[in-house]
Length: 171
Image (cartoon, rainbow, N blue to C red):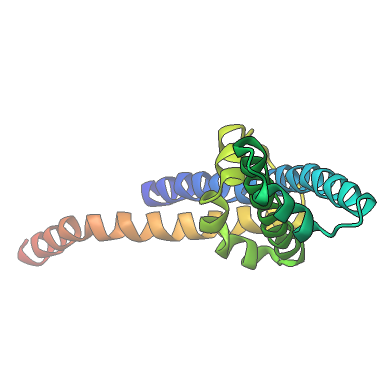
């Protein structure tokens, strides 16, 4: 009886923990989408200004870099990094939006190892998702937690059971 109660508590705890992953992934995707949208505005504005001057992006960046003014040269480097970040985050967003629940879970370390991932975690608000994905994660968490704690309690109880059996045979 006690083993079932402890295992049930473990199941509920792991269910609550695992059910948070879809919510974190959703908040991460929203934050990432916002970053991509803002970088898109900057990129398109730069490209539009370059086109008006008869330049493509690379030629416009080259103008910055060729400038003897250190401020302008620095701005050119900064814009180059902005375009690289835009491409990287856009590709990441496309991968996440096309990923299934298991793929997203496998990508968790990559989410957390990014600037957007850390900011998402800093601002994360726990929630109980009621999507099918959230229910599946919660169910898997409950089963895994229940089984792990049940096995742990049985393992810890083994020395006491053997003593009880030995006394029963002697008596």
